[in-house]
Every structure is written in C-alpha cells, then in structure tokens.
Amino acid sequence: MQIKTTEASSFAPTALRLSNVTVGNEQVKVGVSTESGPGGGIRLNLSQAGSVQSGQASKNQDIDDSDLPDNIKNTLKMIRQLRAELAARQAELDAILARPPSSDSQREANAVSTEIASLQGAISSANASLVSQMRKQDLSSEQLLSVATFIAG
Image (tube, rainbow, N blue to C red; front, side, top):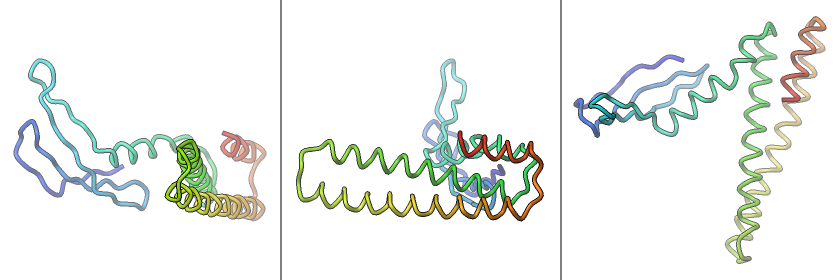
C-alpha cells in the first residue's frame, strides 16, 4: 500500500487530510482525521474508505503470499471480493424483507435481488475463468491445494 498526502490542513484536533491510497491498481482518496488522544497524544482515525482499503489489503495477504501465478491470484481476489459483496447484498435483502411490506420495500427488494443475481453470475464467470486458467498453467499439487483452500475459505 502506498500513501501520498495530497492536501494538508493545520495540525489541530479536527484537521482533515486527504490522501491517495494505492492498493494494487486502484487509487482511492481517503480522509484521515486527527484528534487529541488521552494524555495529550495524537490519535489517528482513518475514514471508512481508508479502513475498508486497509482491510482488503490485509485480507488478501494470504493469496499474495502464495506461490500461485499472478493471474490466478487476481482471480481468487476477485472471487473473494464478489462473495463479500454478495453477502452484503443478501444481508441488505434480508433487512428489507424483515420490514413491514410496502411498495417502496418491494421495489428495493426487487432491485437488490437483481444485484444478487448479477453477483451470482459474476461469481460463476470468475469460477469458470479460474478453472480455465488452472488448466492452462502447469500447477503443482501444492498449488492446486492452495487454490482449493482459498476457494473453500
């Protein structure tokens, strides 16, 4: 992860700094606020986007550390991300369905259901792509086991 500060404000408890965070090929602006901590120290709080980016980088560290080819690593990360998005959308749908029925909630449920179907299709495509990539590569049995472990977990 690479962090570059692009804007800075004064060093005050409510100061906000915008930074570019690069994770892989993506660059995201992240807000970082500082506050006085206990005993007069400084406490640093990442914005939600920064926390998400940081969590994604460490969440995929096991894949990055494996001895798999880069294209397979990228596909595994994509599958992991799609599964996380699918779980979030499913939780959103469950919350919508738990509310009292209304025309708005029905529209929301239909929209989220469509997103869920799209994510399921994307996961199927990514899995098919992974199988195709694995067939083209001469993977060792240890590498095949690694792929199976990442897919299962």
